[in-house]
Image (cartoon, rainbow, N blue to C red; front, top):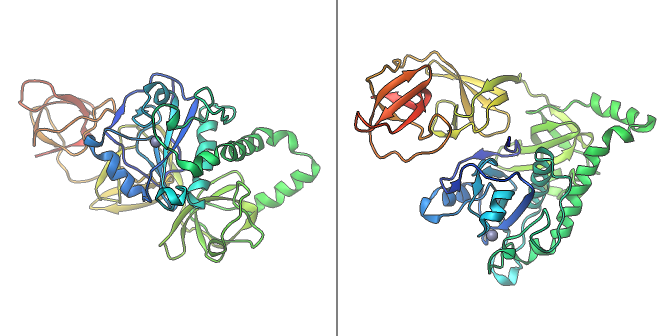
Length: 387
Ligand SMILES: [Zn+2]
């Protein structure tokens, strides 16, 4: 089974609370509610705590931004059911108000992101459509089917069929694209494609625009200028506003967008390994691993202390592009500290010792030991530093 993760995320913070790998293909999606109003940073902190014993594959904040906290290849601890969680991508969605009197609603931005994420999960995992049957046989399942819980709350429960309808409408639009390409639409397509919207462009939204899913765009969103955070076909995801104090991560058809400032940045692709380190900023703190091996798009690069870093298009973070740094190469017998607690095959491990001895070195693979004799694990040399 080959698994990928969504490129719709703004950030990644992998929880230790998970079972790796999942033992079933992905055939279900299980949205939960957070039973509170949360940012993705707050959610990331909660699931990073091992004592919480819970996680989800994704979290969606009240502002609609998405965080990856458990790779899709791993089983999250989310729905009180290993059976479900081995089969499902689980998504914890922030509420926009709390308390039973509120009905536990979620914001329009969070709902738009949930729809977009469900479409993306279905596409990548070949789930033909999202089906709510009211029991565990559907491809849309909920926490209350497995445990005595009110999750996902009255609002999401009441929107189960609406969510399926909106997701399936987009899946149908994607699947039917070649067959609806008659003369009329192809001339429209030509006009649309000449309106080239690129990642990083600053755009305005036309007054008659709706979100990609067809729901209405609030007037405050239409009144601001937005940076495009990703484009796929005619679907552009708007991210930060011009002053960069809001990030809506909402999809809009490119035909509704007008470029007011072209991105000056040239993008290019690089090949990365799943074990390559992700940084929060160029030269900044580490925040986990790339997670999936493959070709990634770099939208910006910068050099810090002689090391070139590139920013991933997904918004997941920065990666090292070259290591022309002056750091001393690691040799067999050296003592090193662990700077990223991920083993050579991508699993997390707990760092108990302040330094480890390199017992073996083969290319980028080092075998390290906390006591200088017994093997702790194999690790990529990018994840350790000489002490
Ligand atoms: Zn739940």
